[in-house]
Amino acid sequence: MLLSLDTRDVGRVTIVRCQGRIVAGSESESLRTHVASLLEDRRAILLHLGEVGFIDSSGLGTMVRALASTRQARGDLKLCNVPEHVRKVLDMTRLSGVFDLHESEETALAAFYRPAGRAEAPVSTGRSVLCLDSNIDVLAYLRELLRRAGYEVQTTDRLSDARLLMRVAHFDLLLLGPDKIASPEALQTFENACAKLPVVELGSEFSTSHAGEAGADLLAKIEARLNSKLS
Image (cartoon, rainbow, N blue to C red):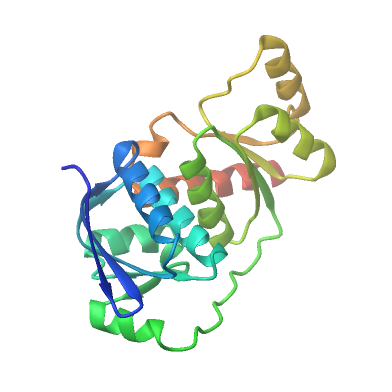
């Protein structure tokens, strides 16, 4: 089912009722574009997710980017009527602490009129991860997923910038997406640069997989790879 977005204003809050799937492609793009258009003159956005059937990794990344864009515009974005299967995704990826979740439109609307509390910071692992992927939504998802798991995270969608970051900063692990578009010489130089760095590769299916399962599996792989380095 294509994603439909039904929007109405309630006081100073704009409620966007989402129906369908928030997944890679036109669905994620429509949500991102819609939120961007709302931010031209509005600052309080509420996503009603009661009729959302599925969210993949790219879709969750789109929601993270929408939250970041809203806060950069000095506004806020909240979620309400989150279905159990979507809540499980947020719990599995530890992003339930990133979004402000509410049981109903009424409780969410009331929250917009209360002073915001300070979010609890995740416990740091002391480990640093560099993420390289061509999908901007996936990178947004990875940033929040890994930060909530206690990792320091740097991301880029360019191989040349990844090489630059590796020269100026220390990383304990490289998270590598499937699309490495570069000349053979550049690829060889990059591979030489990260020869001693533990690498976890993202499969091409990661962006369209169930966000919760993909995130939990990835965190387990990262932990296993880092632990094997120590042993």
